[in-house]
Image 1: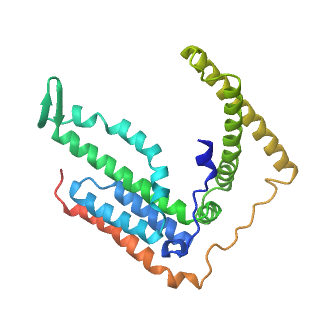
Image 2 (image 1 turned 135 degrees about the vertical axis):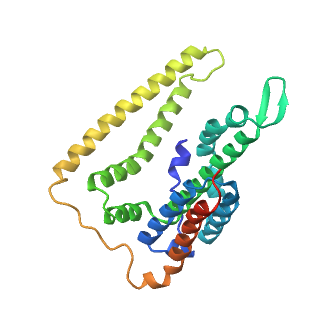
Image 3 (image 1 turned 60 degrees about the horizontal axis):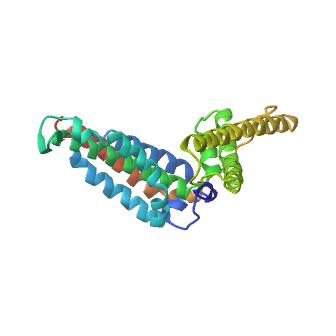
Length: 262
């Protein structure tokens, strides 16, 4: 867990998606994610994957980047839609004793899982090709309250520190005999509860120290200045990703309007 947090989400590169100006990139990819969330027809799902795969290939991000990060949200979506094929719908396509696989449930599960995968992959494209600080500055320029931007920045900064503390505490527990076969499950859960409680207390105390240090250095006295994210010379050269992405998003919305209702 701690090792995965040490790897920065952003991967430097020279692809067209990396050179895409931050503000139009954020707006365009968010519009695409909202358009994908509106898709309700399975006929549009293959085209959604074509667009997302094309963006991922243009970003030149390695496949290992996506493979390392998809299992965590993937487990969540599997837990959410795993029962739909068995409990939703009326058209039975396979049955064994009391278990019946239903067509409507399979279609609904495929649609939900497909949209979720496409949206998460698009989010990883945004995070993998844009530095986190640049994203925060872009959100600030689009109207994000300064307090929320500061909270996001501090959370991102100290997430790695909390991961280091967790790794050190787990190593100390292992040296003191945690996880040995002779221990009962109840005792192991007690150790884990103590670990999480100690980690929460340490995190709270550290947050208080950080806030007091920031106040002593003048935090909150004057609003910070925003620096320019993209130079004017980059905007014309990187206009085509914005147009193509917004066109794809508009096509999905129009497709939902044109196709007959389910």
